[in-house]
Image (cartoon, rainbow, N blue to C red; front, side, top):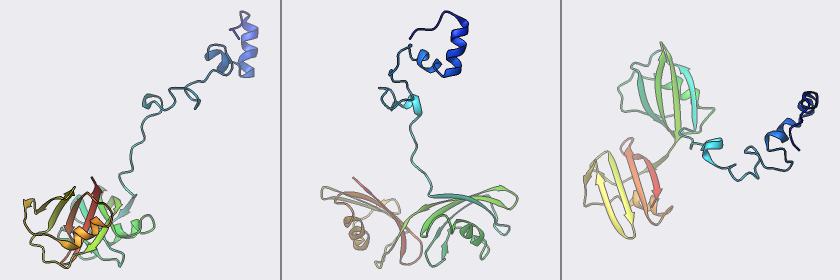
Amino acid sequence: MLLPDDPREEADALRSGERAVWAAGGLTGVPTPTNRSHPLFDVAGMHGIPRNREWDAVTSAEAPELPGDRVEFVALEDGTLFTDDDLPEDSLVPLADALESSVPAPYHALALRQAADVWSVAALRVTVVEVPEDVPGDKVDLAINDGERTILVDDVPAQGDVPSLEQFAAQQFGSFVLHASRLDETLWEVTVLPL
């Protein structure tokens, strides 16, 4: 179908919705970029590439007793909250309460002050592992790839091993990278990624 020469016919066509057909070259059945059969439908420039979610939950809450402008904490299923910051007792509770209905514990949270007593807080689910071994540091990085093993404790190469962490990761992947951060004497926040 070609564009009509008569303006009255064009007006009638516009009212009847035929303009979209004309925009596609006047041919019916021609795929347009918004049609899944179009060869460019999945091209990033057409619709964008969706980003992976960075957080499992994001919310805001009032925390009047919380000092500073930024705080991180880890929440366990039993309600225990761990942070490296020296904070007034129960000052993190309003943030944890705000996240309670959005993300199940355990999670790692980051909170930023927005205005006066209002904080935005985001949480990411984490795994917490009990490590009975005596580890001489607060951070462990372990990589096992095709039998080759590398371990760092507090960013320093180490000769020892941490069997509980290695077993935990080996149950998931044959070759992996593990990062663990101490929460208390035996509890560690652990991330394992396959190689």
